[in-house]
Length: 270
Ligand SMILES: Cc1cc2nc3c(=O)[nH]c(=O)nc-3n(C[C@H](O)[C@H](O)[C@H](O)COP(=O)(O)OP(=O)(O)OC[C@H]3O[C@@H](n4cnc5c(N)ncnc54)[C@H](O)[C@@H]3O)c2cc1C
Image 1 (cartoon, rainbow, N blue to C red):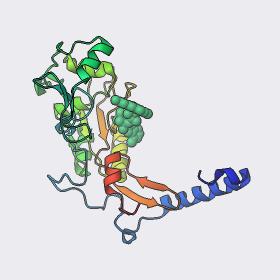
Image 2: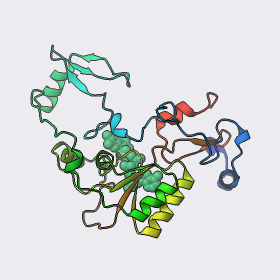
Image 3: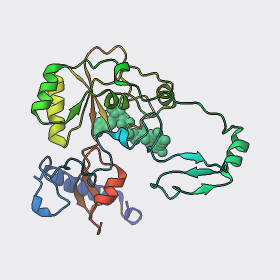
Image 4: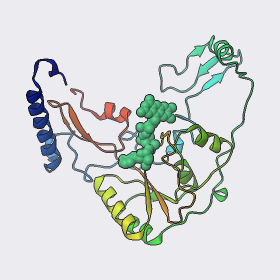
């Protein structure tokens, strides 16, 4: 609250109420496409074309850019070059491409670790090694007729069957894949989510929302004893900014937007 120090408590309450009224007004008002680029009518804004990577940082097949059994991007990791010096790979970060001659010594000295020690990770599980999906046919048909993209591909399911807790990552590295979702759905907008939730209630299907998959509280693990079909609802394709209210420093964005897209898609003046 920028103006907090000089105003009294009733004044501040008044200001807070006014702000809430403005936000409520935004949320209730039908979106007007003539408001400009930033105002997208939900579900009717142009969606990405096949092969187009300009509008979304995270593709549906996130394993193409993210490590399937580790933290972060596939292309970004520490590597020891022929001289034994640490280098950071990729092009995403300021650190990328840099050589850090003292890192190995510091790492070994500080942690007593030996960088020669390697624990080789298991390969990506072959589709045959993952338990076949328990699909709820009526739910699948409903999703299909609503035009919502979905997959029951083993890799897509395994990728969404865990978060980023140490024990989850180690299980993957050691080739231990437990119960994973039976299907992944990628809603494009709020109305798609409403449809999916209605179908799940109607057909007795479990939904697990999936954002960035970085949970460190085991929140994305599928209960072993669950016999109903489990569906991972991946919000990564819902990344639009619906409106920005500069005066009140508020914005309405879709649930799956990541910080990079928020920065990239905002209008230059904001
Ligand atoms: C290396 C590392 C560093 C981290 N550092 C921090 C830190 O500094 N501060 C911090 O707060 N956290 C940190 N975290 C934890 C993690 O990033 C947060 O828990 C994160 O906010 C989870 O968001 P997510 O979108 O990845 O959620 P997910 O992991 O995808 O999901 C987490 C839970 O939220 C539910 N969920 C996801 N999306 C929705 C939705 N749209 N609607 C309803 N439910 C939903 C899921 O079903 C699940 O139960 C860190 C994690 C890692 C791996």
